[in-house]
Length: 325
Image (cartoon, rainbow, N blue to C red; front, side, top):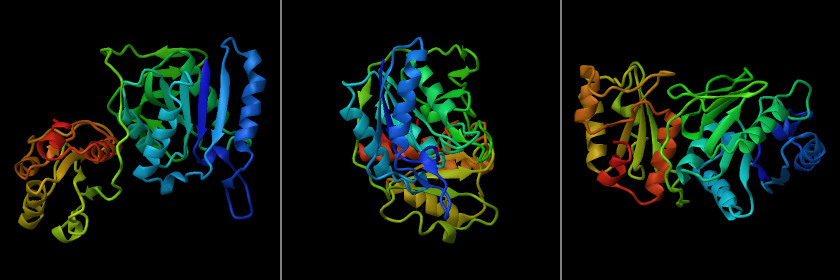
């Protein structure tokens, strides 16, 4: 199997300096050498091509334009390689895996995003295990976009960063993991229909989507700058099963005015797991009446990236809302 490994940035390729962790300029070359040395010991006949991005992406600085940059890189090499691994920083890894999932829908080859909590060439690193786990998943022909970390292979649009210090930094709160890697893989029986792959890499509008946090005492003044005229989509981070204050007329009027001018507002729960149940409580029914769409059991990372990509494709109005209905 011919595997392309894109080193986009992140902790995995860093080294210590007097000022803290900095990118290691030799990381890609050293990783290439290490994988080549390991290749003869594997029963799989893999060939690797490790590529270091000229300008590394600190994932905390990543924007929707970087999602498209990565997707464009993979698309340009699609016919040349059998599988793809993206090495990425953990801070926004779940956003990138979700974005790639929606840009490479029903991908006919494995695209696996991974990284590490500790730099690859430090003691007690998780970096090499995560890379080798991603390679193993590629060899198992697990087509589609996914995220591998710790021991879990997670569907790309279901991953959520859940822990800053644990080796298993990512969870799949509302969907079974694809598989768990120990000595051998343990696969979750998942039913999926074979569908034709669609590859779409729309131009991104970085300021088109925003987050609307709900918190005790939230008011229209808190959201006024967020729902500006450039915004076309928003993720509402609600309480529990999809609730928000229903006694603040100004707040509800602001939501209603935004949806009436075409802003698609998607309701996603702040809770770590579970689903939005539209209208289960009066406080949630008020959001429905204001035109807010239920995000059901989506992670906020998935809702955010799906809005960006749908807007980038030119969807608006009822067609944009239909992406979530």
